[in-house]
Image (tube, rainbow, N blue to C red; front, side, top):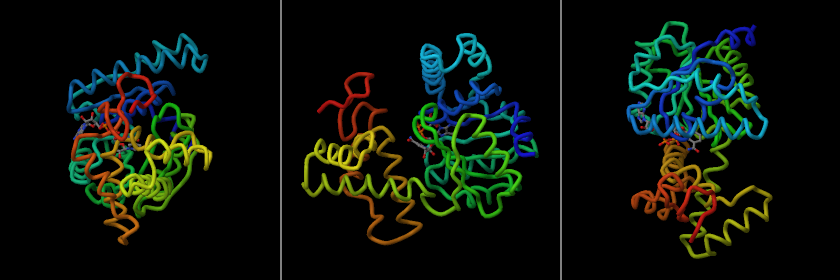
Length: 297
Ligand code: NAI
């Protein structure tokens, strides 16, 4: 039943053509779904077009999709500045900036624009799905669909049920994520859900370790990478995620759960104030002088 509903999803709208939105749009196009990718910034759409094209070609060169799949997937993608173009979508996945005000405003607009049966999903890292749902007349059709970064590579989608999310909508979105080739975990709607509830305090603690001079950034990262068998250390991971996103997630945890342990580290705040937002801006805890993934001092 749910699998059938997911199979009937023919058009997906993705809002926000940044790191996450472009990856999500790619997943849907590769899964055989027509995609509208919307952003308010023309340059972001252009960058997303290039990034998706490069990424799909890389997948084909590794044999992960057939060569014929390249043009098929690219032809399913449409880029737009107009929110109205999403009115044919069966599911909309929102991936704009992590600001509750911006997301609330958008959900209220989406409720008016999209068809009545459309499911509204958010890729938020930490904002309450229940509060976003309250901006709409269809709270049972609002859900969290939290992809990991980068969406095309990471195997997990965390699905967050708002207080009023229906069983049917949950089952449809679960089956859709599986159609994207992902594994699913389900979280109740509390700050940070599962992954960021645990990950963000670890990253914040790594900033405190750097701030209080316990060790160098390299030793903090190497310690956690080799000492706990993670693919990269927490400071490098923060650069990949975006320090602004990490700070915003800590503020949400602190606001929602209270307590000193969720208080954002002053050094993290200072880096964000300086515009050192991580790899996407060429500078975070490390600097990134080229397009490669290797941080330089
Ligand atoms: P990003 O900064 O790379 O991209 C955000 C995009 O949204 C930009 O292109 C911006 O022009 C666009 N935008 C902003 N306001 C808009 C609006 N009102 N309408 C249309 N487009 C708008 O951000 P990123 O990293 O892709 O994050 C997006 C969302 O995904 C956030 O909610 C974030 O918390 C979540 N997320 C981020 C992860 C990460 O590792 N970066 C991981 C999982 C979730």
